[in-house]
Image 1 (cartoon, rainbow, N blue to C red):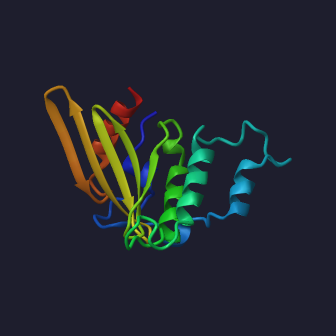
Image 2 (cartoon, rainbow, N blue to C red; image 1 turned 90 degrees about the vertical axis):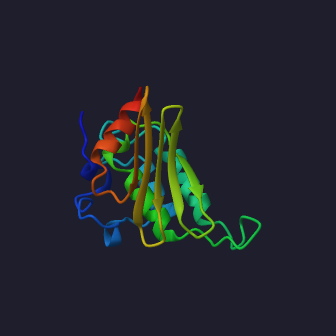
Length: 168
């Protein structure tokens, strides 16, 4: 199946600016987490389609959301709940379900990064406290390298190349 950048980041991703999730991001709380991962009579297990790693990553996001001020041994700020909610919303999108599990990396400014790394690809999605997204993508294919840094606008080719290398 082929995905576009809109499938990963939503329909507003081609505006040439930061992608902001705004009010579309569901609140990630322990009770909403339990609703997603608890089977209910109205949903059969076949209807609940998520990646095999989403539960683990959701737990990591909840842990990151609880980091105290100074968590990094310095002046590290607590991770913004807006960044955590946007990351959860993003990783819950079907386009990511067949990807390998990402690393969740808190940053000392309160933002966080979602990262995938292999010998031929680096993909980093930085999400700030307001849910705005910036990308860094590096793909090496033999003697050729592709590098992209910026907003989601114009990132489609780089995302597809990164996906091809991550799934190879």
